[in-house]
Length: 186
Length: 168
Image (cartoon, rainbow over all chains, first blue to last red; front, side):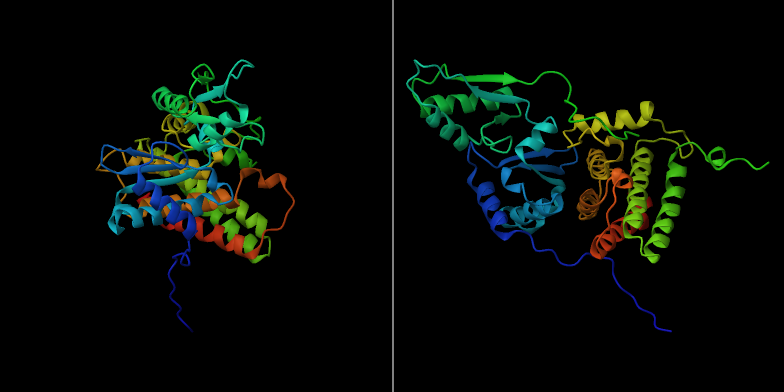
């Protein structure tokens, strides 16, 4: 009778190398605006929960996103760094918003008398990290805190002089909205 | 007159979850052997769900036989997860294996005494993510036929959780 021993390890995974390279560069660059937004939440134990908010995740499974994040950290911080990571998650902006992570938003209130154009505002918002995934005509520029939003608003004003009155900061209120009726909660 | 099946069942508890997880795993194997791939995945999803929930409630100190209820236990756990910014969609919230797994890892990471040694936590997270891709409790309402590789992936993930149930 044959006695066959096998491991239960997964097959080797090949993360999306191009995205991992791009994310590694972002980790090293320390840019102050734009996507991806990288949150590193430190637990009291020193372990990290890394959440990368990035619309580029859209077509990747959660598992693939985690692989990309870990590979990017390997590249940017060295191989040993992943031992510090307890959780690594990738979310698109709409997903992060639904998770309650991005309750603050900058919206435009453009008037006819304003000297900046809608297209200029749109491009500036995209460069700041606005998401197009809420719908083609529904750009959303979202943040975790009022401070982050205010810093972004100042950058927008600097980029587009005389747009001070155009940018409004708003904050979601109330509990996480139900996306739809739950089919089975328990 | 023998008691009815429903009347013979215990209330939800860590102990019951763990025992039922093993039973559902075997149910899944029987279905898989009969070529019922979707049914097999359906069972293995519950294997995973109960295993992870049992681990979480054990971690927070619930007694093995204490009754677990929606209002007293499940809902507060989900609320805690959302407070920790875990991505936890409302539909099917009680059954979201990936979110429960993330919660378990995050709560363990709060204390040096309970944190997972690397790379165990990331391996656990991966199993939760894999099952999110393959399983919903609403599979029971759907008529479809799973691919062979999907069945294999679901079995491997559920099996890994079951094998490591007491280390979670």
